[in-house]
Length: 500
Image 1 (cartoon, rainbow, N blue to C red):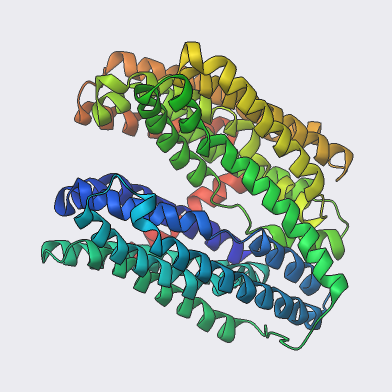
Image 2 (cartoon, rainbow, N blue to C red):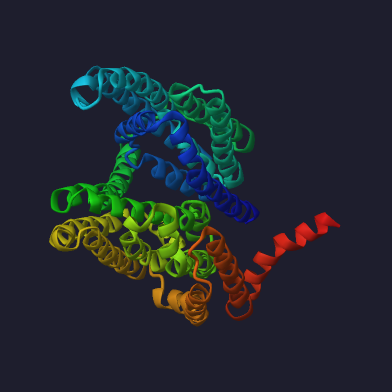
């Protein structure tokens, strides 16, 4: 459990670094290399992301290896990896051919770029494509480390990669090295991170790969599982990836810009709140196979902790987000506030159920989950086309909020009917005792905003500091149980002992 606690802490630290560097570092980088070069950099990354899709195999690696380790059958885990790696190599060959074909058609695809921009884009694209081809076969390393519960090593590697990129890019920008150096740094950092993870697998696990193993039955199981995971991933992408296109058809660029800011904020909130996703799968698998199979106590424990974090983000944004958006991007984007609120509200009910999600994957109920996500995606497309002509970005966000709530209801039905989890007990034990305190904190947050109207960054920071003190103070006294209080106080006690 120490690995899980430390891994969760490091996950939040890594996400904090990502968010801070994203908010502070990106504007400086744009000013240093210019908007045109930044556009080429962003374009290259987006094109590569269209091709680098692992078809659910990464999730399959974690699930099957964790299952075999829980069964004390490392030999089956080795055989499973042999199949997976061969699949990745075959996909990588196809990826290489696709990227080469795209390279030769760049001038025809991007006709709006000038000849000079085309030449620069080809270089950037080539660097990114070579990195993608080299790194793609190593996607399973994350699943291997997660299945073996080596969360600390996995998250430290991610922190190292981010700090290496920011530190090296800073030096390059100060020395005026420009666009190509930035892309190359990203590639080098990614490869170094892969090497570090491979060393961790070699040093901290006994995992090997049975390259000679072949089994049509096992391959069908992998394909079935990863296929449904792919459907889930594609349905999720339909929500936000299609939204700008729908607005482009029905509303125009102003609505797209408003939605873009709201989506950025939702992305930060989701990423931070979803930091623990995946790391509990091995433990859930072990409970289901070796222990009594009752994961409700773990779901309540982890769910309450996640609810504390998620509610902190959501209530804080509801209280101060309007002024934050005004100070960050200006009066023109004030409509982004209500859009962002609509996008993040459903997370309050869904994201604390991480353990339930892990149970669905562990028990291979992904087909049922995929059906829920497909219904969600289809309903969102219909709702978006109905609402966006009259309401613009707000209409899209109302649709997304509604279908996300439908997703959570469908998700809970799977937990109740298929996994046999008493979902009412979960909500009663997690939300029930915390809800009165959270409502009171929200009211106090609005009072703070009213008394100290944050029309400047300084006043906004003062408001947020007061909110942080009020939020955690009230919950510590009235909401948290002894285990949660100890979880918060332990780092402070260690810090005080260190200072002495």
